[in-house]
Image (spheres, rainbow, N blue to C red):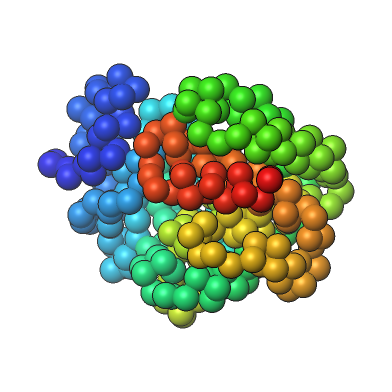
Length: 295
């Protein structure tokens, strides 16, 4: 079987010195196709941490076969999709976590390509987030918002140095303060299932015209964690981010300060990471906004 592997996936695998995975991949896809009775179609572009292929089920249903690259545990994503059961996220049709493979509902174009007005996107992203949120037991093996904040706090200073200090020390300090407050605010009793990276490229149109999320990181966290990513979106829009935060709080009943602090966390972490890998101008736009807000 000959596969068209997107350049970004290939580069990720080669950078991690896992070239043998590329050699084994056709056999893995062929084996999964036989087990799940799939007709294999072209690859889908856009990601770097997994190969995604258009496939067709034996009954003609369009689907997506997703296989994670080495080093990526696809188990948490599978758990989120099982818990969501097609509400707010793409429906999970099959899984083989041992081979890092998921069979997913095939969705349409991303919200970014359909909805031109960023403010309208923010409203739609909020709607789809609310559909996903649901109470989640502490027994469910997903990381918590507190653990994410702690992980970010450990990582950010080192990443900031490695990226050449692309924002002010005060901006980093502000983000670290926000991380500490959100870590302390975590409460298992009120935590819900959250996506972890909601934005307009991760929301695809479903057949009924609504939107569903893909690529969930999956957390047990306060809803503000997801709303903070919506505050981070579109750093070049030029709107009042506090007004955006208050609108999200009004729509959901979630505390505005918590949303703002998660927005600060996502903005600074994402901006520094984007600068470290040369993903521009996104990184500079985020950190310019972060420096301005800190000052």
